[in-house]
Image (tube, rainbow, N blue to C red; front, side, top):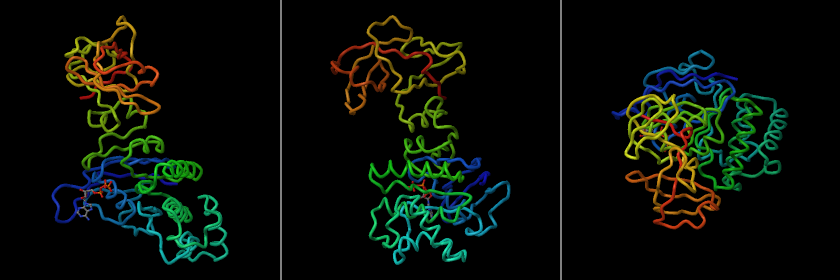
Length: 346
Ligand code: ATP
């Protein structure tokens, strides 16, 4: 088990001006699963390749348990990377693919056979050892890639968008498998994804990277309750921002005075809140209740999304479909934004 540190890590690819990764520092605790989350092109794969030793940083350092690994070859680092497109050896059987790492380490053939059998059971493919990768589904190939990585009992497991080529059902199944294997084996794991929901479900901590820079490194819950800025709140699915200024538990805005928690820091900024925390009220007597007109009603199956307008401010609310029943577009309703759901960014 290994503690990974990234120290002021940057990468500028030859012939380019803008860093693909700009001064990233991150402590990845022993045995935990950390998600590197960000949109396409933000530098996630670049970071993983540098940790794996497949790419040299332009500056900065990477340490495993306090010791720099920059001078170590990829195969000596104890980190193994699983790629998005699996990269299985097409001419080898599933069992040979899984056993490859042990064969390279010159392990005893009987021992390899036994361990391959255990790994096939672990990834729930007990009867498919003799097939070729081309005879497997995408989800099965991904599980083989995972087994091939895990068989060598790596200190650090690097998973680069391992679920992105799978359909929705398989993605959920693989997500659960990765989480349970990781918790069982306690391998320090870094998981790259652009899907915030995937990061939230899987990770102990999330590092959000936007434009090559780290925005926030926190628990999944903190990204919902206390996003660091508007871009972060938006990435986590909130479109709700009321601009104005905070002082002594009051926020002055175009909607008038809004009561806010006393610990919110004074100054200009935007109040933000989760769409699922907006409350529909029958009357207007509660604090922080506003009249809103219903601009749109979007039925999502288990939830209903309401697009609301409060004078010049547009907000999203997510409510139980039963609460939205009978509402019509253009109708005026009362909504409440209780102080405890409000957070200020900026
Ligand atoms: P995705 O989610 O699409 O895989 P990513 O976050 O993993 O994206 P990277 O692959 O790390 O992003 O790329 C970060 C930036 O570096 C991008 O702007 C990309 O175009 C650039 N880049 C990646 N590889 C190279 C290369 N070999 N030469 C030049 N630029 C590169």
